[in-house]
Image: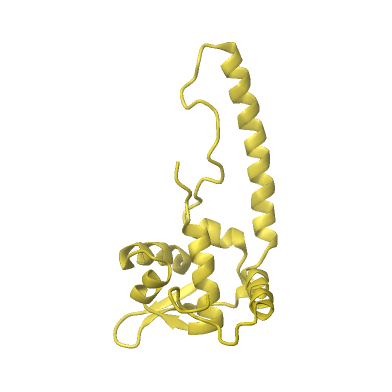
Amino acid sequence: MARDLRMSRMLHVLIHMDRHVGRATSEQIAQMISTNAVVVRRMMAGLRERGIVSSEKGHGGGWQLACPLAEISLRDVYEAVGHPPLFNIGPQADPSPCLVEQAVDARLDATLAEAETRLLAQFAAITVEEVAQDFERRFEESGHTVPFPWHGATGE
């Protein structure tokens, strides 16, 4: 099963919007995260519904942050992109008459539910601003002199 990249992509976009570009069109964002504008609009719509971003149509329009990164948790972004699966492992999909499989499935279900609860609590405790500050620390340590707002630019 392929990894679901929606959350990491949207975190990436939010930090770029805050630190580098302010407002961006769906096409610009699509270029940044190597996808198409339709996919971007679908992902950004979830962020808009949660009050994380706003959008304007027409010339000079685009997407922009609706609140500071310090007010957005990783859990907010996770929920905005549609609650993607957190784990690629799990119990057998169909109930089995095998008692061994039933025991395995029950233990996996309970353990994964506990892990998901803990992970979501951690997501709720981390703001996007904290991630952005980690970017700034890495940027300073890298020796770069200019932040590069879009993928494909030299140095990012």
